Image (cartoon, rainbow, N blue to C red):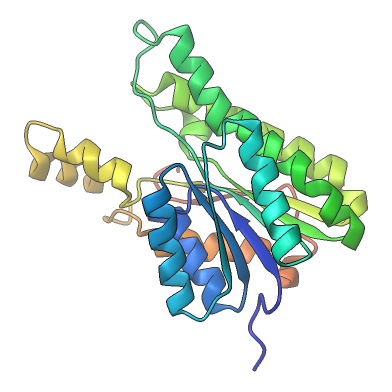
Length: 254
């Protein structure tokens, strides 16, 4: 039986842990060839080794996606190593806490650089390869914070809201070229950042319980659950879907 992404080439940013790593593993198990990225060489390599254990062909590109050179390095690696680019998953992101009174211009700029500008840079860089094949799928990972806002996350909420709007504009512009752009908005998910946030609270057990209580389905999301939505968006069987904003949040945004 043919696997869903057999022979396709998938680029994933922020693949060193959490949602990015889970998505990379899911793509690999469906036959994809991978270019994986993280700011940390160690975490990039760890993910790559997990993918190789699944039998996938993998290229590692360590680098900060906020820097233009990282986008070019990923595209070059894919084209030189595999000769094509089919899917781009813009997953890398940062969370800088801060209220409206406390956030600084530098913190807002850093949030926008990683969470928004990098997505534009990666997209611009892969477009020539996708256009050459008259096909492609781009999946941008936003957040329910971009839909409804979150206290003490002014910069993060602003950047994810911008990403959602930018994804829709990209989808509209690229639709005639059969390049689809969709957006996944996770809710509270068991990720390294959330784990660190819980651990840093005065009462970690109570903090985790409060997060869970806020979700109608009574549980935190798992990275693998978000990965399923990412693969759904990238799958060619969803070829008529573009500009969609899919929430995967246990009902938190309702």
